[in-house]
Length: 146
Image (cartoon, rainbow, N blue to C red; front, side, top):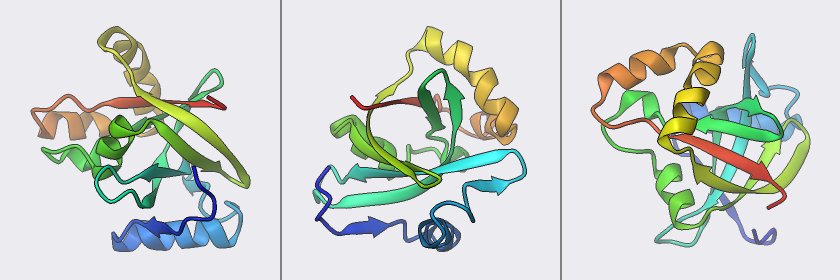
């Protein structure tokens, strides 16, 4: 990702405030959103605008990969960040003070079946989000350094 390009943060009020705290403190305030619930900052390139867009997401480790869930609280539509990374899978990630580029991909059906219990262990509400919507909520695998 181009580091000299302006990044646009999520306009959603609480998410934007979370991002600002995370950035201001190098993740010391914000990495753990709630007890046992870690978050990262994900920057994608807008599929139509080309602008860099940043949001805060809960994550889970799977080996050296990071898992994020495109739930949007069970909304019937995928979140914009998910559409962005399906158009351009090169993303930028900040976990605490560490920053790195990664490649994003959607977990396939068999892999998703294995990963779903991992993500719901950290955030059980994903199960209720899935019940609220007809779409299959994607799990995105972020592989650092690719």
